[in-house]
Length: 51
Image (cartoon, rainbow, N blue to C red; front, side):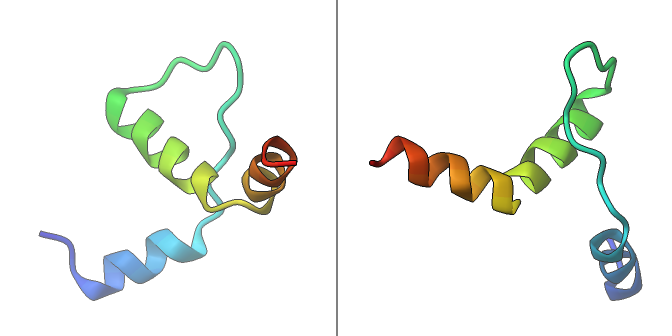
């Protein structure tokens, strides 16, 4: 179980984007993937697809 302090720290740390060739653990991949879904670049990409 994570404390509220740990959750606050995770949110303030910049998560690097996924890059081709990254060698990640499953946990790290899922963390970065989830973070990428909330990025402005992802939202712009989805908007472009819906046009």
